[in-house]
Image (tube, rainbow, N blue to C red; front, side, top):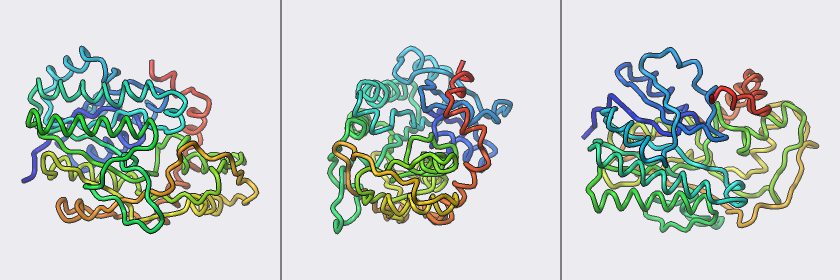
Length: 336
């Protein structure tokens, strides 16, 4: 069964993955209209969607998903076919320093959206989660599947796991038509330059050292953001209620190898690499098995890591103003 989706409430749409999802939906479906609810915290960048401001199928609402009055009013007025929840505090290091904002947005905010969706009888709800809820893998262990027990190892991952459990409970207790997606590490255009790939690209372009945690032999499975967004769109329309779908790139790489690839593509020397003290509790390896999404949703990766990384480096090379506004904090001024 495929759900007919015409009006979507996207939360956190000014963030990296949410912005790419909004762009994809508006590009491939001329009948879609999207409302974007975003609190514009530090990683919510209005510049990511500034060129859509005149698009009649796109509307931006500045608001907090944990503000019950805001969410209830928006849902009551909207008549949405679906909610896709990207809104999240997502940086592990920040969660280690202070987990409180992660609990508010990721857990309380998710429950607020679920309550509003149930009250408005919204036909579909998609929770965008992460493979970090599964914990860490040993080198020879098989990749995470949707049935892997959750074992989060950082405050960020724990808050996302808590949100997933709330969505599961909403399905089992209230019969909500809810789906959870979990992805491996994303990369691509519009990613806030604190995550590994955009940080290292922007640092390299500015001849700033690249801080590599520990020995750099942590392993991550990389998926291009557009492939991930295609997967979310497939889960939105064809996913079975109550199910979880993993999306990965089948592209496991050592962090050090990714670092060296960035330096090659930017034409910068290896002398920019700086090994720094490893993150507390740093998970050693992530990898997801996405066979379920491939078989049930008809989804598959279309961008190889080599192709995607080269395109991503080119994007950052040609978007120096975007980088400058993020680094200076000027992008916050357009948040109002």
